[in-house]
Image (cartoon, rainbow, N blue to C red; front, side, top):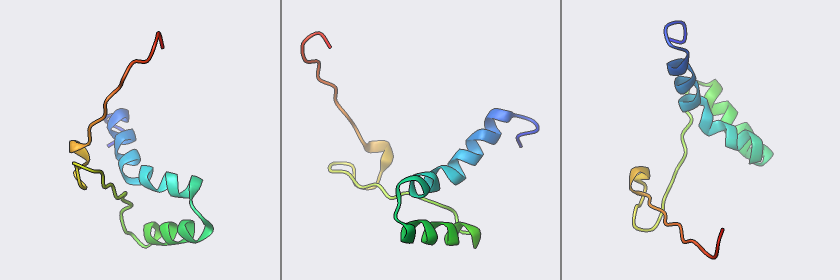
Length: 71
């Protein structure tokens, strides 16, 4: 895929490996071991999200910016 379109190749890598990057960088040793064991055994990494008024539908998460002063 990357041979034909480097951008698509990058998106594919990020989609499949990006979720584990946060665990590797910030997780405990136990979390890192669990995550890497899952990936090395063939499982796809994933993240879980739950927010008020959106549940687990990441596409429904909203945010609001409020300007304070001149910043």
